[in-house]
Image: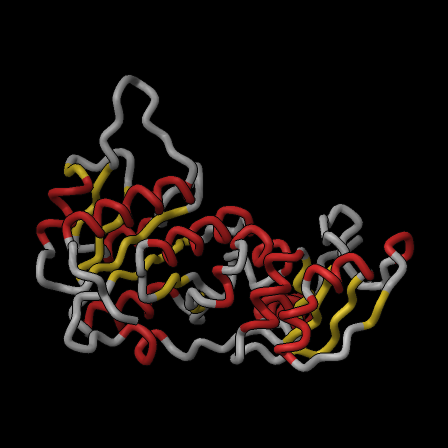
Length: 266
């Protein structure tokens, strides 16, 4: 087959980068938290009788009429490998606003997480959970080449997707530029960096902090690294010093919380 014409390539790229019009959330935790989220536009709820009983309080509070389904013929359009636990919710994607709106300091020193081309929804879901635990203002990833809001991501986040802002601006470099204009100190994690994580964070004491992490293997892109105020490594014992990106995010957020004991309001 010959090469696709340019117009067809542009069309396909636009479709991939366009925000989804609907998302199917699945699993008891993800569906329960989405039902409890007043910002979530809910469109269709499909549950088995058993799941309906377990979610009865959340369903009643949300005021949505569920469709009761046979567990042997569950009609939601999910991947066959999805562990839906008898519950699926069709909803609109969340709109958390822009980086400038959500991340603007309000008399505090907030922390945000930047994800540079992290595409695995399970990793991003785990990062969202850690970000919520440690009070991060937002998790920011580019609209393209990052994990979109999906049922798999929501399930991995175990409810955090409904509470932890997940911003997906068109361009990560522009988002970093906006953060720096607001006074953020940007620390990028790089296993080959000379500076350890805690001293790098301490160099920005008194300023809002952005922690940038790259995809496993590839790490931060060159441009992203150049936009950071410091590159830092997580100290490791022995010769093996590589962490999964979600684990690295948790360690970095913990280090930031230790260096900044005050709680940052969102």
